[in-house]
Amino acid sequence: EAQVTQNPRYLITVTGKKLTVTCSQNMNHEYMSWYRQDPGLGLRQIYYSMNVEVTDKGDVPEGYKVSRKEKRNFPLILESPSPNQTSLYFCASSFLSGDSYNEQFFGPGTRLTVL
Amino acid sequence: KNEVEQSPQNLTAQEGEFITINCSYSVGISALHWLQQHPGGGIVSLFMLSSGKKKHGRLIATINIQEKHSSLHITASHPRDSAVYICAVLWYNTDKLIFGTGTRLQVFP
Image (cartoon, rainbow over all chains, first blue to last red; front, side, top):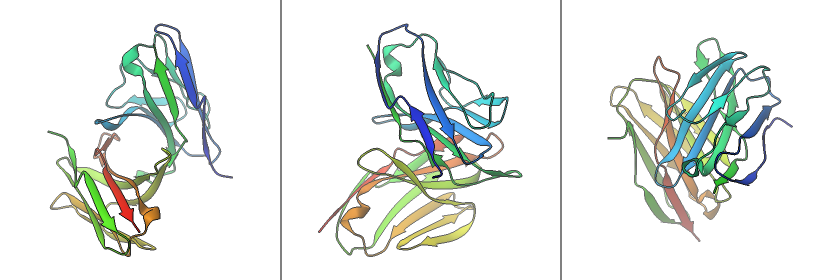
């Protein structure tokens, strides 16, 4: 089954304790992206990747890192989480047809609470 | 000012009604997405369009590039259409995706 998976789905942690949220897709998509969703602010893009070893900042990259060493995986790293990173996080992927984007497939979301 | 504005923010309808959700944007774009977020939180892509009109079942999406405006229509609405509908634009030349804050739709039997 074609899907985007995220782990963990729920995480409660404390300020400053490094964590990684994994994202994996089995559709051989070139494009992958991370978003956070907050009440009243909607979805905002954190980082995206056009292909292996190619990553770029979205609207709210501060406090986050990503890597794209393999096409299928795009982990989100919080080196020193803070309470303002408490949010619902989504990973998504899509095909790139030349310069054209296609519809995005979203993971189920990861609810992160930083105390 | 947000680059992507949706209206209305909340919408209530009776089953069978025709629904329209609007999205206006202020930047040059290469594509526009309509997404549906279910009450459980999952997000599904409904349409991606860069011109004209697309139809899938009871859903129709249109875009007017010159007016920087898109609409999502739902014909013969049903309670299972109750969800948050989100418009997102792909900012031309930056590859960044900018989202509207969503329209919460509730359809009652």
